[in-house]
Amino acid sequence: MSYHIPVIHPMVKTAEKGCALHTEEFLNYGKSDLAYNGMFMGMKALLMTGIRLLMDENFLKEVCADFKEQTRGL
Image (cartoon, rainbow, N blue to C red; front, side, top):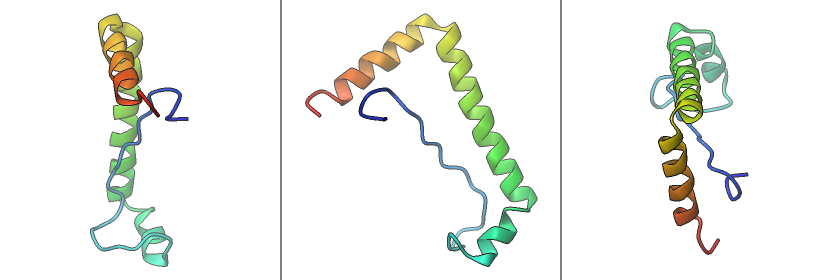
């Protein structure tokens, strides 16, 4: 999809550094305040970006122009 439209892939902290993905330790972090707060902040960032795109026409134009520039020739 990212070859056709601008997308966002936020990285949020849901576990301590060094915790391997797809492990029981990682699963247990998923039940923690650290994971909840990380996901909440990630959702808030996505929401606020979407709102800005809908409300700020100049920002939307800048995002689209940057996307066209960055993907030229792909």
